[in-house]
Length: 417
Ligand code: UDX
Figure 1 (cartoon, rainbow, N blue to C red):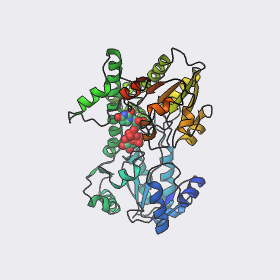
Figure 2: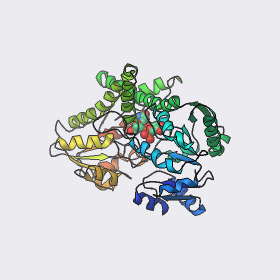
Figure 3: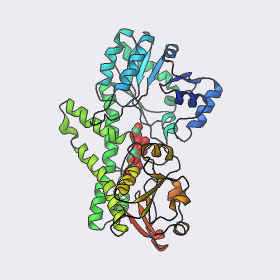
Figure 4: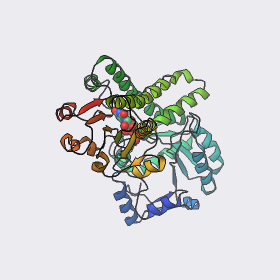
């Protein structure tokens, strides 16, 4: 927002994050964000505070707080969104516009519009489609903008204000759609459900490839050439994790149940199950490659983040596998270019080593579980010179089996012979 020329005040309850942001340091790893932050701080139109009363200076209020999965339930926890809206109330006027970005159960925007009704502020829902690791580009060059607006003059006013906020982005020709609240909320949930379905579809095919001797990477290439299907998001492997896809499909099932439409998304349970089975299969393949037991074996895991170019370890498939192997007696070392700090806070019982060569030294088996470029580019000969056993399991299907086998490695992967 600051780089688009707006004056921005960012508010959070976490004082450490506020201090880091004001010092020009993003509190998480995201390519390109640090530069934008420093430029915004230097220009002077960007500051961070925990003082919520500062919102009275602003005309547009973006609510971007998280909606994690509730412990022990599938449903999303919307208490942070509710609290953020309530904290705004005393500072709003009839010219304010409050824009929800958080991923929420359908019906939330309408409920919160009632909470804000007395203030005269307009509420709109403008779902967020950015991918971690590509957040800056996805935000400045989105493939669409969706405005979920209320009925009547307020809806039009909110849309006009947001058009002014996104003027530069709209001038690039970015499509923008105006919908009711419920549709805008569902666009986000439906998009993430579709993406999760695409990944689990190809991972289900990987299971069949494993049963029949076929190669899922060739299968994906071939079906992906049909542009009705498309090759994107058909990378078979360890499956999806992170702070969005897993909890969003679960929250969708929970919300559909509340609405009496649970049958409509019952298939998502299978999508979730296929995804979780990949983690177990990964462990089975690794154990097989180590002659049936992890006990006393040293296993090096390349990658802790749920995907490359991120330090996010929420529901990380790589860490789930690391833990499973550790509970089966394996001596596990995990390495990652960015996520070690977060990962070691979550799983202090695992051993973390920052340097790749050091992490690989003495390994009986190497598991590539997050496809950082550094791991894609590993040299089989060089790697062979430091490990104890030349066993490699490629959990993301990113290495060339021929090259690794030619260098004397036992190469195993998910969905490939
Ligand atoms: C996702 C959506 O893509 C984004 O539009 C939404 O705003 C937030 O949720 P993100 O969580 O950043 O974004 O990650 P994404 O790139 O979608 O990847 C999710 C997971 O799927 C990762 O664990 C990734 O490794 C996995 N994945 C992705 C696959 O296993 N195969 C693929 O082909 C693609």
